[in-house]
Length: 401
Ligand code: SF4
Image 1 (cartoon, rainbow, N blue to C red):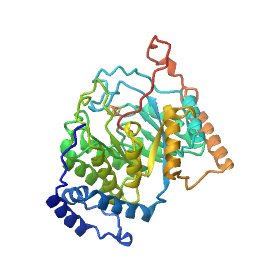
Image 2 (cartoon, helix red, strand yellow):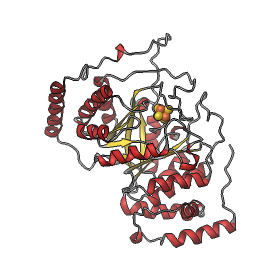
Image 3 (cartoon, rainbow, N blue to C red):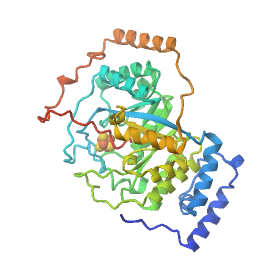
Image 4 (cartoon, rainbow, N blue to C red):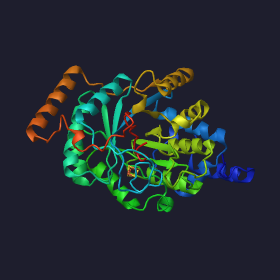
């Protein structure tokens, strides 16, 4: 593993400490949400002595959150592969040959079954991702129905469907979608090295549409794509300077996938990753900072440091839903060893509320007569079977996690 150079020599660290100290007074009472961050002061935070940085992150974290609660989401890929975008990290891009099977939009009923299983496994939020540049009108009809029915189970809902304009966002919001995920991925300066098929400003426009529609924003980035420390600071600056800040900030460690252009990029030092989590916590004190993609590859100590640095959300991936799954068992054991517990939803819908929501969803379906909505027949569009008798693994969009 190559350790990226970090300005941790004594002189640089002292300078960084002084600079950071001038922008952060260090007492919990002084913690405020700011939207005027500059790259230099973020770099200074990133360069703080590690113990100082984690101490400060903990101070911020405890101001707004139960330090031992972790929000748990589950992610389901509802439409996999053949994406027209060229995100260099993503196995779902149609530009790269990663051997990932293509799958059309899932049946609504199957999505609802997965959501129910996620809830029973302890998830409070159900995230659905589709590998699209942007949803088509008929796709939007189906996914809004998914939202209604998943929400009727008493789960928070999140979707990531690519770019959406104001009207599309409004339809999703009207269906009851709580969160929309659209990541910024990296700094504006490094962005062109990673994606060429959609611009940074288009991403910001989507986030603005989501806000305008009244939904909560989930937006973060991916680290370890060959970016510099300055790029990581630039990404965090973009996120923190959004007004309001995203409620959910996934910080991903690149999972290198054979066949993607980033398959041989140098590994990022896990300590640098933890630093970024801690600085995200300091800059976005009220946001859930999600330890996302790459978590399965991290050892328990790194994950524990991430929680100490202020990460307070994780994904139970869809493959982790069965109780016999080794990763799920590992998560449960780690939570037990660290004394962590799942965060409860603020509002737990009563049975009456859930039944009313389900009834409304069914009535809405009958009213709009969405073609094949409740029992949407994915097999009509399904890609050929793999021939090996095994179901293809649905991999979530790299952008999501
Ligand atoms: S990250 Fe999302 S938008 Fe980019 S190629 Fe993958 S599925 Fe498509």
